[in-house]
Image 1 (cartoon, rainbow, N blue to C red):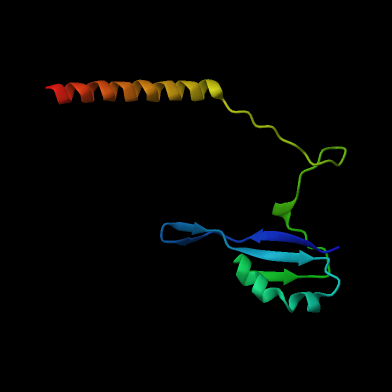
Image 2: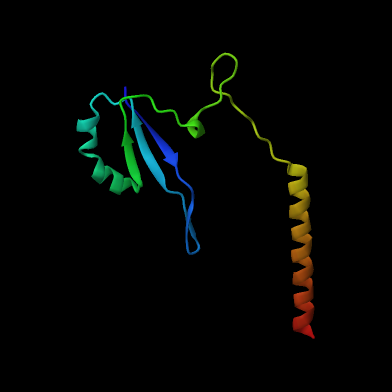
Length: 109
């Protein structure tokens, strides 16, 4: 069965915009010639730089999913440091309150 992958290319800078160009990779395609004949409109529609079609399996290391010892996809849980976040928010609130207080004094003088 054919599968699709995305191969990201080095990021391009256009003024202030950063664009990550990519190539669409279709591998394990049974009839690559027939498959490729209709790819140009699809490439333009998706914005891909190119389309690669292969009968063979194409391994893209960046697309590999780490697995646990049983062969299941490895899940990683990331927890935020909310104590530090809370302190940062409280500091910003105090700063805003101080600015509001001094702004009121400036207007009344």
